[in-house]
Image (cartoon, rainbow, N blue to C red; front, top):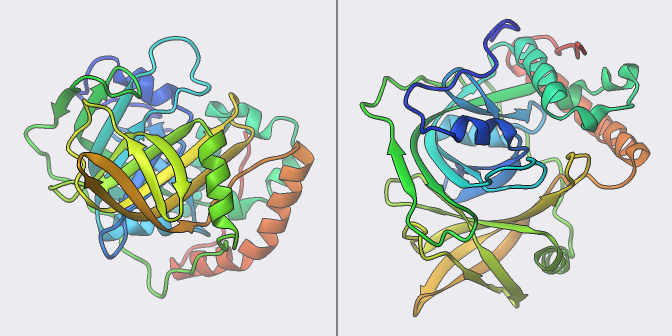
Length: 334
């Protein structure tokens, strides 16, 4: 994955108009599956690759990639209109095959620095370069390259009508992930707040976006926008548009999130549990919340939080690069 590799090469046959949607989107919902087959969905910045849609995750918190390495069935939901500017804001669900790339960590890091600096310039605007170079714990990346196999498009988040649908046919030879490194994957590094129910209740009231993920009959994550009601005890009522695909009961995940127009701050919360539909009224029974990486406050506070996180993650960075037999990547800023 060299620096001179093409930054955005749409695959032949993608539906017209979607390349712009993919390129403009600041976040999409990235859904992957746990060992037990339950969906986990996290807002993630997408990039258009060489016939793929790509997301990244920090090498020091690799769970998003490692889930895809174990089970290549993933989904991306483009349903976040915040900050994309004027024009249409359709909802696009992509289900596809994931390939994890971590065989060349320096190339991965260089690509991430280059692409994120171009796409989200306000995130690091005004930050001293000497400080950013110390953030290898954040910039060192694993990439997940996703070949779209099925795409559905709706006019907006209401999902009022049936979607336009596209499938990749005939199926090509799908690429394998880089080999899994030896040793054990690191455990989660952020703890779930004890008062997560109160936090979730506030997020449901205040944040603009809520997206539900279940697992469809083909074993792929199925992620769609919903309207979420109030969290009462362990139950949360949901409203789903008439044009949505069939949403089966079973393991489910609800992501509630939002960010500012320039992505200098963000807040996201992920609730996991099970979905049931009694008399056509879907409800999520929430079992727990996952830890989140929300970024809020002044630039000074955000920089301080990053440095504090860096002290915790630096040992993990060394351990993860050592597992792969590679040196710690340098942060080469443009």
